Image (cartoon, one colour):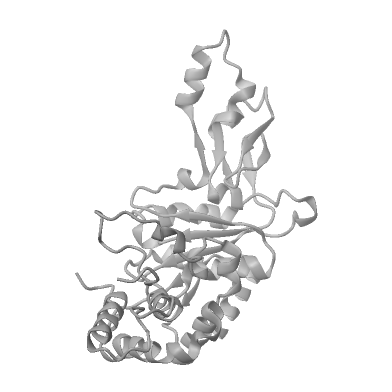
Length: 331
């Protein structure tokens, strides 16, 4: 194997080498740049309409669709275009509960600190309280000139929630306020307590209560695997994101990979055939992975899309594409 091979890892542990130094920059969707994620999002007309309706009505937007249809990226696109700051993201698990989204209280940490002190200073209780993503989203922006702007809250994968969480969110969505009992109990002595927010800012809580002044733009995502209570659905606007059309796929590829679109067309066609004709469960980022790897690696003699017509290399390329475009529902 030549030293200028596209392969960084060669499977030869008995011959250590510094090939990792040739590893190029990651693809745009793997740089963990949230603003980049919002800038490259391709928004459909129906999504634009529902986002605007949610903004006007101050209602949460429940976005349903298969994995890879852009549900979570929609929140970042809205935050980027409207300059609403950092997206406050709450990743739901089977153990998630309402208080986790509102705030956390480190009672053990406070007890340990109190044991090393002559007195329990109630005024310091704020050091042990941090607002969660939902609690932070109900606050105005920390920038005074943006105090009337809503925050963007992403509640991701609601399908994973337990049976109680959707209903527990109803009061918050309707009333836009909550109470921190640990602070309410001492509000007659300490009316104002500083606490930390989810995005590591400081805010002052008055009398142990948080009251929303600008209802956040809330995106709840669902893969459509779970039915939600009617009372919960009544308080949400619902957007179903369909899988991208061939034209939309080309636009997505161009947004991420620029002029690779001509080289990418055969892979896009293969992706569409598997997704639509073979009923394969595929995500758009699988397509991006395949195109990036097969069109942006160094064009060497054993690169996966080199000019060689060697049968073995063609088989290697086909096998790699098959692996990258493997159905999400396959075992």
